[in-house]
Length: 268
Figure 1 (cartoon, rainbow, N blue to C red):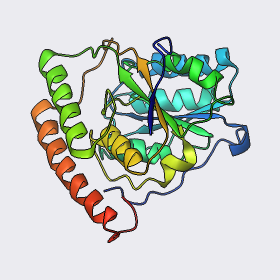
Figure 2 (spheres, rainbow, N blue to C red):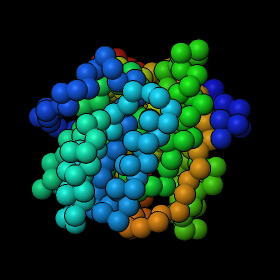
Figure 3 (cartoon, rainbow, N blue to C red):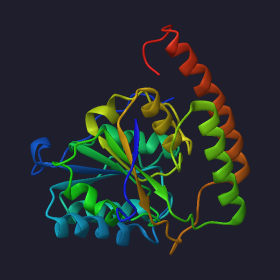
Figure 4 (cartoon, rainbow, N blue to C red):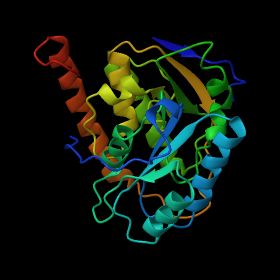
C-alpha cells in the first residue's frame, strides 16, 4: 500500500560481521544511515560531516554505516579518520575489493542497528534534511517506510530519459504505483529491510527494494526529495551497460515473483 505525502514534506553472499562501536548500543540508535562509498575522496568528508551535524541538530540518536567498496583513491583514509573522530560513524567495507553498489549497501544495511534505516548515496546529491519532518513525526504515524521521489533529477538528458523509461517499465511489469522507482533515498523499518532477500550487486538495488516491498504489501509513503548536482568526483554509472543489466535483472525479478506467488519458493 502506497501513500503520498503532502508537498511540504519537501545475488549477495554472506559477509563477516564487523566490530561495533562500544559506546553506541542497539537500544540507543533511532535512525541508521546506510551508504556505499566508492572513490568519493573529493566529497565524502563534507557529506559525512553534514550527516553527523544533521542528527545533532535534530537531537535524534543516529549512526552512519558506510561501506567502502574497494576505493582506490584516498576515500579509505578519510573514512578511517572520520570513524576515529565520530563514534557513530563506521566503515564496514572490504577496502581492497570492489563488488558493486548493491553489494556494498547490502553489507551496510546488515550492520545497521537503528529502528529505521535510511539508504542514501554518498556522492552528496541527496540530503538527509528532506527527512526532517518525517523523522520528527515518526512516533505519531508509524509506517513500514518512506520512499523518496526526485522532484527534478540533476543529470544529463539521456540519463533522465533512461530513468523515466525505467519507471514506466517497472510500473507496467510489477504494478508498482510509485513516482520514482529508482530513487536511492528511502527510510524503512530495520526489521523489514534486513529480512528482504536482496540479490542485486549493482545499480538495480533501489528498484529491487521497491519492487519486493510492493510485492509484500508494505505500507509505504512517498515524499519529495531534492536531487542536487555533483560538487566533485564522477558518477560511476555507465549508461548503456547499466541499462542492459537493469533490463535483464527486471526480467529475472518478474520470473522470480511469479514463482514465489505460485508458492514454489518461500520468499520473493
